[in-house]
Length: 304
Image (cartoon, rainbow, N blue to C red; front, side, top):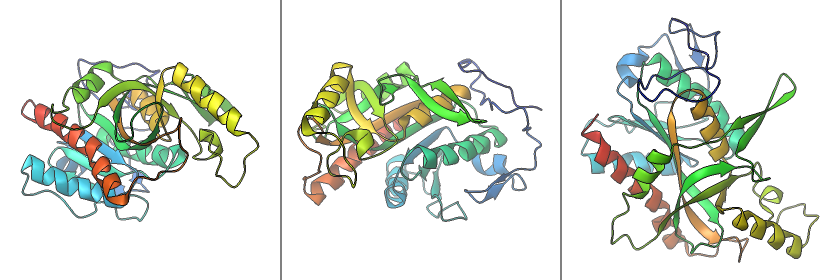
């Protein structure tokens, strides 16, 4: 059975994962090199029940999230040992949920997504949702606010992910599933003590110059230039800035997987470049996207 070639869009009725690669088949001999898995293993038996893939940058954070999931979902046989046999990423399985670290930036998460999407396809998973949970810089928001992205834009405020293929530039759309985002945002408890907002997320390819910071090793612009650009981003509807969402949205669009981006703001970039919040408070804030997404998963799990 050949993988269906997709040119974008999705068929929401069947939930089948489509690979945009005619060179692969379900019967391929394939190695998922950076995960340390291969089709020689019975991937369907081990991963066929996966419905949610939660990704975050830090290995320790995603191990902690797996432990939190196991407790919240009351799953006794959760796999809390790393399923990857390489040192690139870490992956844990808690019932129908994979908790995976993706590293920093789009190049790192791109490699991971290629292999995770193939894993899900070979395991014959259906109706999977991929959710990035992490931290970000906010724009005009109180630090600690959780942003559930409405749309992902690049540094020029365009809803595209730019990749080079055979030396040529391709711009691929970065739309997110609105219903999924709305459902996650609605899971905020009334006594949460923090706000959940919807807005555009700007995805950049760099933490320093790409995000208009003044404290990198190289900087050729002024404080005025920086503030003008960030205010322009805010005026264009951007409410947070991070470094992976464009890749997630674009790749999931191509293969018929619904995706969402849920991040907590650590600072307001219209006021600061540096995070000054005490470490203990940051740890509490980092839990907010995890708690929100877990509440969503719990609300869905009975219908799986």
